[in-house]
Length: 52
Image 1: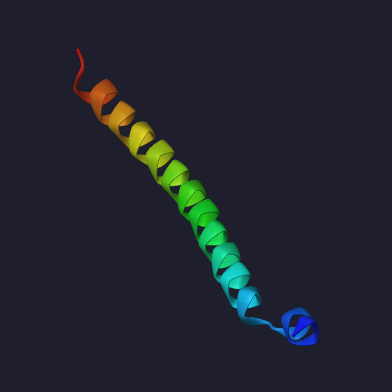
Image 2 (image 1 turned 120 degrees about the vertical axis):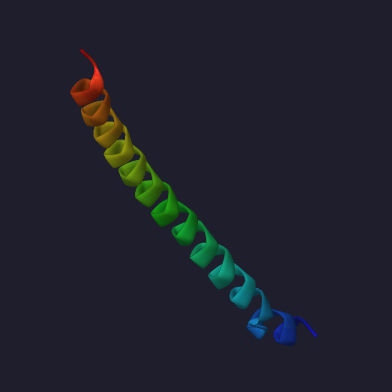
């Protein structure tokens, strides 16, 4: 029973999925930050063009 417990790798699949989820969250956060900065810059340009 102990030998089976030590060599059981079902838990590794959960760890791998958790790491993928964390990596996806980091990439999404970086992408949204970049998009947010680009949108802010574009809107600032529009406002400065329209403003008297």
